[in-house]
Amino acid sequence: MILDRILEHKRAELRRKHNRGYLASMQQRIRDRGATRGFLRALQKGTSPTQPALIAEVKKASPSQGLMRPEFKDRFEPVEIAKQYYEAGANALSVLTDQEFFQGDLDYLLAVKEAVDLPALNKEFMVSDIQFYEARAYGADCVLLIVAGLDRIQLEDFFALATELQMDVLIETHDERELDTVLERIPTVTLIGINNRDLKTFSTDLGVTERLAKRIPSDKLIVSESGIHKREDVQRILEAGARAMLIGESLIRADSIKEKITELLPPTKVEDEHRGSRWV
Image (tube, rainbow, N blue to C red; front, side, top):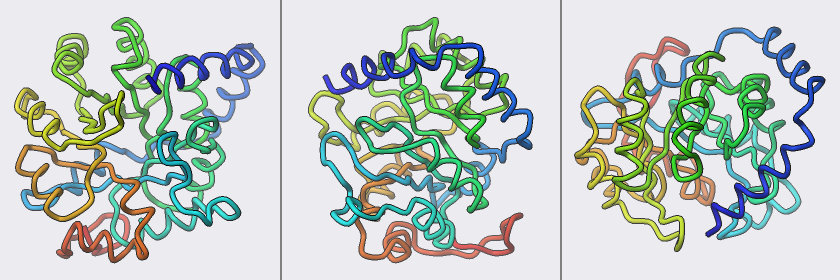
């Protein structure tokens, strides 16, 4: 399974970073940083009964599809993409930082955070404590925990570490067993992601969100991930109970990011504390 390959490589990649010097440098960068921007708060503010909040993903490539756009081979500008998301009304960003399989980089996260006034998720495969210090040092406001790639002790410890570092946590589930583990082991979790992508076949099915959302308590904010391409998909996950959605591929591949977001989320004016009124 591709997830197993990614996690194995990630563990090997991180071994060289496990030293006091590197950790100390990350801790110093964290001390130099201000407070996080509030990823969860942005989603809570951005959702409404008729519109889910949008987490727009900065994504160069994927292991199943390669480059998202042919021109990314010679020119990939994460900051420009993030600015387009901001102007089109995204509520938060997701930035891929895995290098080997997604051609991402922590520097992309840093550059995006310095240029765009939105909270950002560090989209990474978290397997080691050091990654949480990296995420915070490079500007992450939220980190991702993938239940399928962690044991129960790791899930609890990583959630606690992220919280200690003042980052929100999006916990990603794929099936009922994973969801039950989250609800049992981390009852205080607020952000629960439902990934509609099958990790074995990479096919997507919005029925996963419809099925799992029924089991999630109303005090949790559900984020539907993957397979959202048209307005009908948005309406479907909204009716299932999702109050936010994470979209990358359909935005990145669109001829116009602004037009694609308008297609997915017909605009209504609302007030925003950061920049007056905006489209959501």
